Image (cartoon, rainbow, N blue to C red; front, side, top):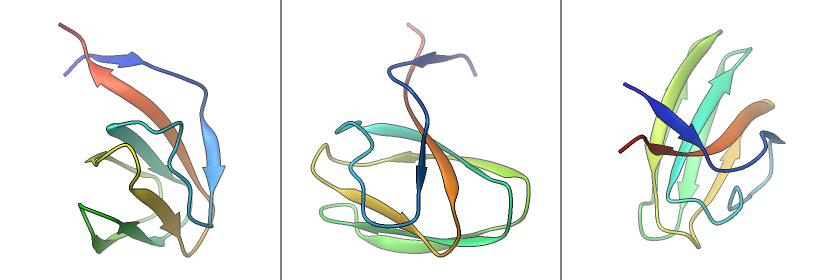
Length: 77
């Protein structure tokens, strides 16, 4: 998978739209529970040193139980 960066990474713990991105790369350097609120609502757990890609609506927010690095991305076309 090839990703295109759409903005700078931000550290997230409290609710953040991550630049209103619809696709977000999340890197957890410690174990964390991720909460997505809005149209794509739900939670999931991330293990230490893992990466996940989350698809969400622009107004949806991402929050985490421990600081995670979130980067707005898109798939390279």
